[in-house]
Length: 332
Image 1 (cartoon, rainbow, N blue to C red):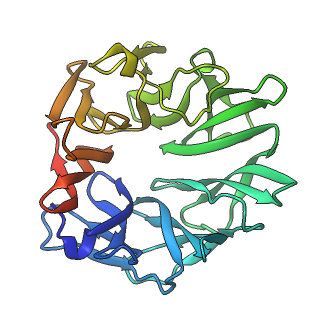
Image 2 (image 1 turned 60 degrees about the vertical axis):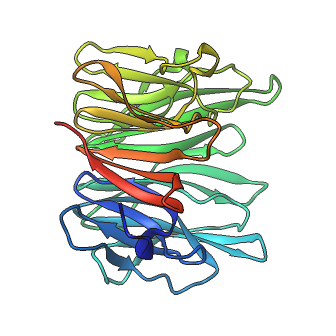
């Protein structure tokens, strides 16, 4: 458990395999960036947010540093965002991108030891363009735009990196039919001008999480449903080239309840709509493993699980007097 003096309030969190990184602090109005490496005496402050009217809402990182978004709000209204790269604790953040219209959403991010990637909406509210951008870690301000799409036609979200592979979700809009058609694409950054590979188009695939042996995504839903809606856990195995959908144990009416999957060395985690049930999926044993199940009539539940390597991090509510940031080493 992370001490409440550092994580009494958590806005965003991510496991990086050897450390946990989160934004927040002791109180709800704190929005700093922290990290904790299991085995250390206590967490470390990475970035002291100088602005009381901003929130660090998205985080990515690796051994090469961290990236995060800084969203500003004044009197309940958005006032734009900025995307920053932080090389190390206490370093001066480097501005990578910023909003062109206060009403446009902030980016979704990815980072590994080689690249920083983000999806961004630029332009104005009435004339916007969705872009997919990538920069080398050793020159983070030298970004190039890989995709540029009129914002009313399609949108790109949730980039994710594995080695030189850039995975992302893309959804086409059919305004006349009131439908969305999501899929997953992958660009090999060693040849970024090549046509992207397409995956899961017939499954309405979205929110990819790649690893060495598998790529995990959420799929399912009707054509009229938003690509961001919860779905079914899907495992794409690289060796066979086959994708398997895996409804989580429980009532069939609640089988499609997965969003924001993440994948480690052996286990898969996800955000579960039924937050009283805490499962992971074991890739080695090819079965679901139940970590905990809480009384549905009580307030105890788990939210925002994130796994990388063998390190699982999550928020645990309804016990110990509130909500705590907790972590566990999973079997290798």
